[in-house]
Length: 298
Image 1: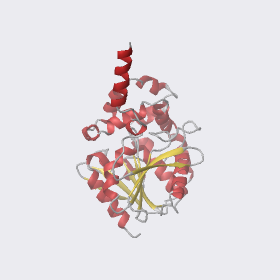
Image 2: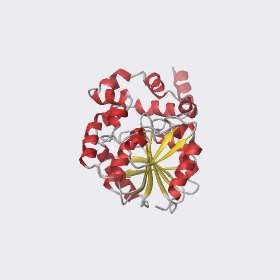
Image 3: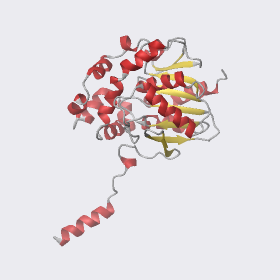
Image 4: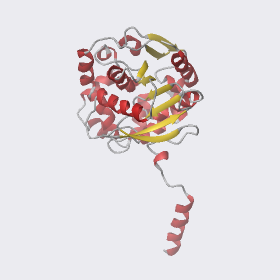
């Protein structure tokens, strides 16, 4: 018995302990730094890089993603831009928060506090997939903080998203709280791998990041809660149909899609050879496109 205990102790000393950085927070990336921002309601896990006085770029992930989906783009941009990449409320190492099914306006409020806390200059804000909704809500609520809005692979509720979105969007929104999370429990890799269906996401390790992040207690249902909140997002957007005051761009993989269709008047930039997960498929081309947008003097 003593020998067994001794062996266990030796192995424990030799094997690295699991850490937040190796689990749902995603591994560290040299050149990018972790920090946290307390919004007063939740604590956001945020990764930053680049010169503090560089042009500000904020990159928002979708589902099933974490901040890590942007890591290559962020590192590229960090050579000459101040890059901020949060885990949105309920994702990765950001808090779940006290409000069930928070809407885009709630997430936009988090982002407004983040920008104030980090003393960000008005930023180019890129919202991918489900990150498009809080990006749009933030631009609507705080045009002083968002100087150029970029949507990528995600649309605007109330402005055509419901008619153009793939079927899973309505299905996720209609499912009762907890049901889909219970169905997925223990099968996260199988389900998310099939959902993503992009070899680049697997090869980059982002699928592994997603599995670790969304299998944590409460996290998958929190993601579904964002879909359940889409009708509220749509109602808010329909109630205020005025054009945004800042320039907008639809950054699309392969061909114009849902971002261009639901963001009237936006410039359209297409990344050839990329699909929905363009930041994974063609990260340096995406960084170049964002850099060009940030260099514009509107």
